[in-house]
Length: 253
Ligand SMILES: [Zn+2]
Image (cartoon, rainbow, N blue to C red; front, side, top):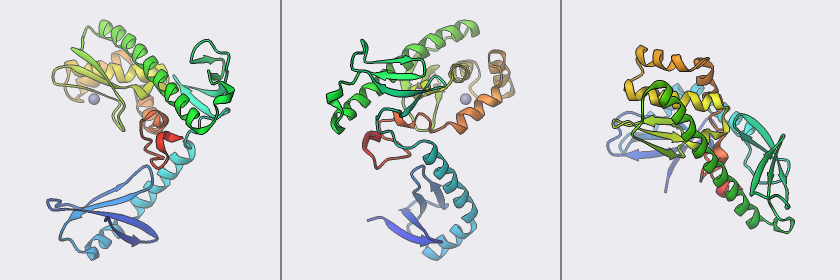
């Protein structure tokens, strides 16, 4: 059973580890506050540490609350808003649609037969939607990698798509690039920035001045793009197999 303590009205989870020397503290997107501590450390010590960190905890919880308010769990109902390539689309069920889904003006039309609206059907259609997002993302990102690897004259040895929590992209020692396909919700210039960033790592395996100089040759408004990624961190959370913001709701439905 997990050890808990109450602190200033918050329920704090304590994880004991035999080799944990320093105290660890984390506030998770779902509002869970967790302390990692050594097996032998007294609760008195832990409370003293929490007192020191109280304002940080409160600020983090406020941030979490803001994220959860901005990104409520998806229910796959008409009228719900879905982001795609930096624009918001309103979900509309269109039984007669030729394709499984289609972006049409400000609408995201999804082919859902009207007799198929009970919970388990909606879940299946929601999974189809996520799959379409993934396929579109892969196709588009491969094209953008091609464009920029030609422009920059740097070619990755391979490309991999992932759905990570907090990593947008990476470049391995062997110059294999990995991209987070959830980025498909972002404007194209943000996707391009992440791609240029990872391609630039083929040449510079660090974040040195020379690395950023290379990135800035191909990307305008660099700081604005970095800020966008930070503030919109959870915008694509609904695409994850398990939502981080709403983990208690299976597949966000
Ligand atoms: Zn980097």
